[in-house]
Length: 295
Image (tube, rainbow, N blue to C red):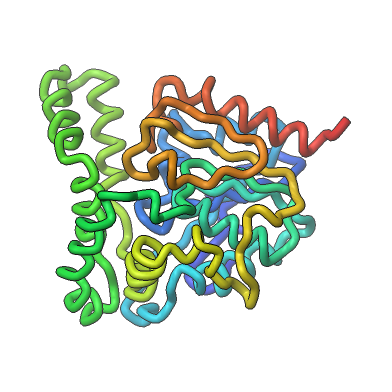
C-alpha cells in the first residue's frame, strides 16, 4: 500500500478507510504482512469498519544500521512516523511490536493502545530462557561481524520453544491435498514466517541480553526517549489480547493493560486463524469504534 510518511528506512503505509487513524506496529521479527495476508487481511477488513489503518513497515536493515537497537527503532523511526499525523493515533502492536508500541505510548501523545501477544515480563519465559541464551552465545560473534542477526538465528530459537509442534505441523501438511485451500494457506503462512529481514546487530543484542536475560521491560528499567516505560502509568484507553496457548509469547509473559481478553489460540492463529475474525478482529474493531465515537 502507498507510503504516506517516512523516517529513515521505515515508512507508514495507508490502508484507506477514514476517521480515527490506527497505527499498527508489527514486530521487527518476520515481515509485517501477516496483518495483510492475502484474502485474510485484518488491515483491509478494518478499513471497511470506519477506521483508518496505517502499517509501520520497518524496511530492511543493512550493516550500516548495526548500532540501531530496539530502543532506537522507537526513538528514531516510530516516534517520527507518528509525529507526521495530524491527530494522535491509536497504536495497535503485535508481538514485539506491542512492546515497542507501549514504549511509544509512554513517550508521546496517543489516543489509545492495544497490544496483541506482546511480550513484557521476559523472566516469565522460565525454562525457555536457557536455550535462548545459549543460542545467542553461539551466534553472537558471527552476528557482530555481520552487523546483522539473520532470520535463521531467530527462527531456530522459535523452533526450540516447541520442537515437537514444529515437526507435527509439517506432518499434518504432508497429509493435505496439495491443491487444497488449506495447503495453500499453510504455504503462504510458512513463506511469511521464514521470509523476514534480519535484525540490526544492536536490536538482536538488546532483545537477547537486555530483554530476555535482564528483563528491562518487566523490571521497570527500560528507558525510552529519556523516561522509564511503565505500562501501569498510561492514562489512555488500553486493551490487551493474550493467548493462553501461545508458545512464542507465553501468557505469563504477555502485557496486560486495561481491558484484557484471553484467547485459546496460537500466536499466529489469533491473527489469521479460522476463528480470528470472531475472536480478535471484531472485538478490536468494536473497541476502536467506541474510541472513535464515544458516547
